[in-house]
Length: 308
Image (cartoon, rainbow, N blue to C red; front, side, top):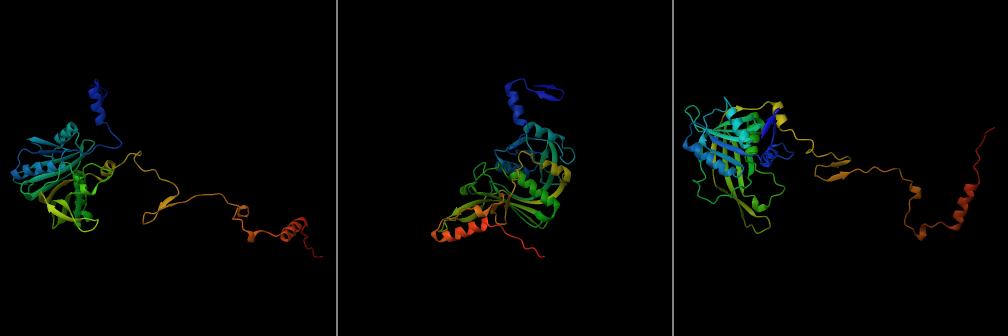
C-alpha cells in the first residue's frame, strides 16, 4: 500500500479488501473487545481476564504478553492496539499495592478513548470453581441491571451503558426461546456492584409456557467503583449519532396510540351525497304523481313578494 497526501491507496486486491473491511459502514460490524494485562497482575486478575474472554468469544482478542502501560495516564498504547486489531472495546487488568486486583473497562470512538471505568475486584469465583454445565461459546446473553444507582447516579449510568456495550453481543432480528439460556445480572448496592452469571433452565410446567429456573455457572465478581474517565456530553452525543440513511423516515398522517394501535388519516374531496348510489328498494321508488309534481315545480318560476 502507498500513501499519497494522507490517503492510503492499495496496490493489491488483498490490501484493497482489507481497507474496505476497515472503511466506515452504515451498519457497523459486531464490536470486538481486546483483553490485555498490565506489567504486574495477580492470579485473580489473570483468571478473571480468561473467564471474561471465554464469555466474549469469538468477538474478543486476548493478549497473553504483559503490556507496561497506565491507561489513565497515557492511553496511546491502547489506541495503537485498537487500530491494529480493529477493536472498539477493551479490558485492562493490573495489580499493585495501591490498587489491588484492578480491572478497567473502556471503549473507544474513532480509535480514541471515549470513556473508561476502573473497578476493583474484592471477591471472585471463576468458571472452573463452579462445577456445572456451561453455556455454549458465542451465546448471546440477557443483561439485567438492578439497583437505584443505575438510574440516578451519572457514573453508574455510564457504567451500565459501558457494560451493555461490552457484553451485548451481535444484533439479531429474532431469538428462539431455547436460545435464551445465559443471563448476566448486575446489582448496585451499598457502593458495590455484584456481577452474577446464570444459566436459564426450561422445566416442564404442565402448560405451554415452561417453568424457568436459574443455575449459577460463574464467573461471579464483587466490584467496587474506583477511578473514572468519562467523555464530555458533546463527545458522548457525537459518538451516538446515527447516519441519516439509518433513521426511519417519518410517514405522514400515521399515528399510534398508547397500546400500539396504528391509525391512518385519509384526505378526500367533498362528496355530493345527492348523487350517491344507494341500494334500490321498491318501497323507496317515487310514484308517478310525485314525479309529475316535482317537474311542474321546476318549470313554474318563483315570484318574489314586493310590498307597495
